[in-house]
Image (tube, rainbow, N blue to C red):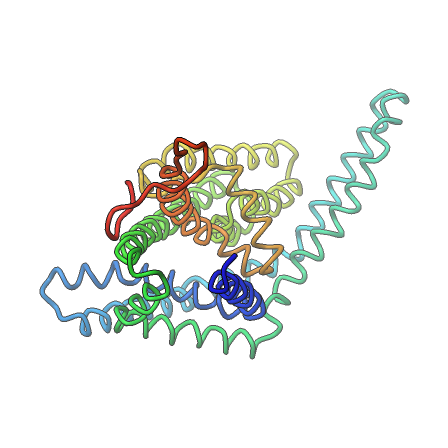
Length: 358
């Protein structure tokens, strides 16, 4: 290894160490990039009406702020009120489940009871978990000052990226060798397209799932249907784990009325998830974003382990961007160009000027 290669390796390792130490800041910057990418789609719609970019940005931010204020004025108060009732009533539903378990023990044969003896302990643990989960819901926001400062940082960065994205984009591209910069520009465009498609799809899915859940719970006459529907829509942002958590509160409430109603709620949520997977996602996402379920679940575990709760929330957009870079840089530009010469040694085929094989 030459001196230049050794220095480059040391610089690379030191850079990774620094990035790891400031990983929360990097994640907040990525959050701003995702928001800027989403808002930029709205900005471009305004620009098609021959508005200047500055005016288009101002209109987009004003519209989003109006929607946000409307959401907090119209939706949040009844949601918080019903959520508090939900916190009080879910343990009652789980206690009802324990009662049904006891009733079943009196009916079934003794040898079967021995096999199911752990059911009572399971329901006790489930009640304790549900009480902690919903009872401590608002403790997620206990560090108010830190959340406010992080939110302000994200908002400021988002506005800066929207106002003049070119210098930041060019600065990132300059980190790569000169022969590869045109290719990096192309990869960044693909990342922008993929992120925009994902944001559009997830917002649409959240709205539709909340609406379908509300209608279904109203028809089943499940209490606090509005809060449960909003919760189902919000938890759609976290695939795999979110839909599973969203079904627990309405099922527990339905148990207070009748066991069949709890099963009906479970069937309703399963049907809604099938609609999302087989109808909504193919229509909205189309060919913009294609994520394998196992890879999605694994990425949630990895990002949550590295970055905590914020990593869990941003696991999908992080995966979308990572998938584009792996596909374009590693697969197309490295692995697809890897060849063997006549002596049997491996080498990379020369890429075109600024572009690799596509």
